Image (tube, rainbow, N blue to C red; front, top):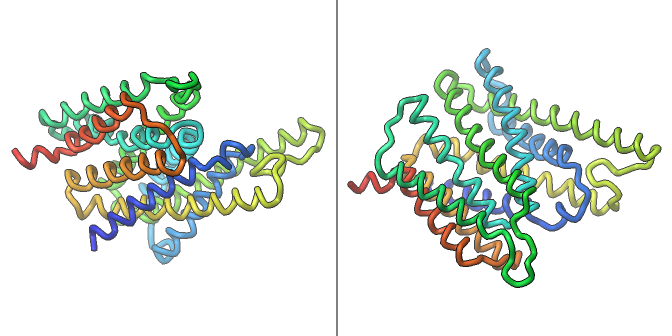
Length: 309
């Protein structure tokens, strides 16, 4: 049953990556804040139903819910922008490699031991990122495939992804019994925060254009396109909530040296296949080597090879 949940988690994560890479998000003038507010609103509903409501909370639940919420807002925003503005396979690797930063933090703050394999994995992951980002232009027509915009959002995706793990680790050390409540509070905060920004942008744009309607979530879009964006946000909310909640459970019942390589490796491989087969994205030799190095780095950092020594 554990491996069935792991398979569901991987597939959900890959579907989420694919949805965020759909051309409609790039071609339509999507209000990113309202879009992600809708995504997390789905989290609120699903988590509340799953948990049977709010069963209890403490001061730590509220504090860490607030911290986790604002970091989650940055994570969702940067993730959406990175996937919609750059190649899906490179973006997937950047996001999946964020636990390298978490490992370094845990070694420094929590005094967790780091062995030779993990140090080698961290260095290998750095080399992987360099190889992926070094080749910024297509070989055929000189079209830029890794723009500065993508690099900025990919860096944010990497940092916020790592911060979510770090804050969650702090919460688990003092308030593990209220995990679902903390995530519900965090999701509520994110929904309200992003919705407030999103509607403020809509009002500003309408006033700027002398009352011309920009349609809220999709400026200048048709009703069908707006409905498609709403459905897309709901779908992203479902799959992202499923894999995030499953990963919390799986990380508690599986050894990290097994869970991280399988989840992150499966996510990268399947997403890369989707990029090549469904989105017709080219995988250049240097980037292909970088992805394989990144996969190897995941195994090293998770200490999988340490189990064999």
